[in-house]
Image 1 (cartoon, helix red, strand yellow):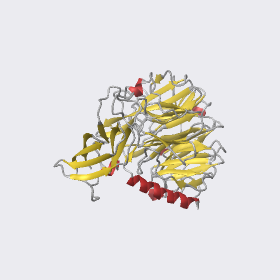
Image 2 (cartoon, one colour):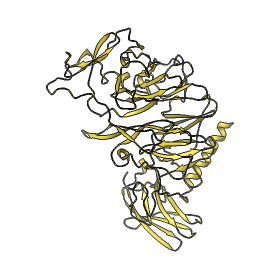
Image 3 (cartoon, helix red, strand yellow):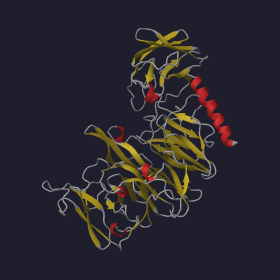
Image 4 (cartoon, helix red, strand yellow):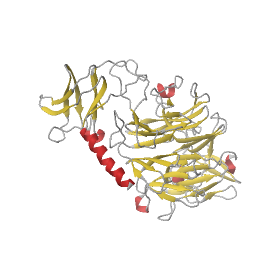
Length: 532
């Protein structure tokens, strides 16, 4: 019965969303978030930190705090890729994107550390290996100390490829315990600092072919040179060395998620690098284990100590599936959840579990035995568009937060009602991220607008005195293509949405369009460029 009620509610809300075109009044605060896409968030107590610019919210305040001393993210190209919190301590993994051979490459940028709750920040450079000698042949099958690097593990000596550039090594996840920081990076694998980022060590991981790593045994890592297999620790040829997910659980066990499975260690936090040991669990087919090889997010449920992780598929032909798994016994057995759904993040509030995914928000109130898909999130004055991807989630003292590519939603009643935060750039006076922004009577965003990519364009306007509002959209020959009418609107900032279709339900052609807003006796106009 509950699932039927939820589904029926979804139809009602989705229908009303499509019928309603005018929303507001919307909050256009000066102290706002940087952008509507929030892929990373982390909570401690009543404080929430979010990407991409270390914005902070305390106790669900309407105003968001932007750090004054973190210019690597406020003024430079750095963006928050990962966060780890403890009382008064914030550790942020920073990344960026660079253009290389016509492609955008995720790239490491460094780290930020604050030990006073975000008042002051220390920037930490991303650790890289020294560059090789100019005359070395990096892919040589014979060890060259000027090219590869020798390392000791147990009683054996091995060699590994150098990581000398930040490309493909952004810190996708980060966690800390005391002054020890662990950073999970793609090509750089797992990095450890035991002195709050002043120095770093590279932690050795099991080869994909091994189910454990112990200093008492010897191992072979695969690499290639001129089409032949050679022995070298090389992330280009072993998916288990490519890092993405990380958790230090309440018992001090470290969970490392790679593109080649799950790795657990009971001594990463304290052992010398050459003595770190691992258990490696890989995807093994349709048995009751992992759903897929790629581990994206790993979280601990504080209610019962169970560990939850998202699985992504790297090879559907091998039987891998998207979804989540949980374990109560340290990875000996797994329970599978939301099979087929691409889940990005997980959070826990009392007996509830929230799973943020590409296809929506999923909620369970019985420890994952059953799930409901939330209807599109909506507050009394605005909404998250129905096609939004749900990217991140965190829980503060009394509410759950959801980050999407269309804004942030939060709920203090387990998802029954929502409050929504979006940028809503002010018509006048700019905001903290652009305090000298121009004044205007109306604007449309996104602009240019693609109906197939963005779904809707939001047209912002101001009602100074209570009035009805008419919107008319014309092509550049001034042919009327769409008319929308509001009910009586009180004083405030509003937005009206348009889906890129004309009055007959046909998608409009790529072209510039003029919109006219009649707000009582006042008329304002603007332009929208449709490019689909």
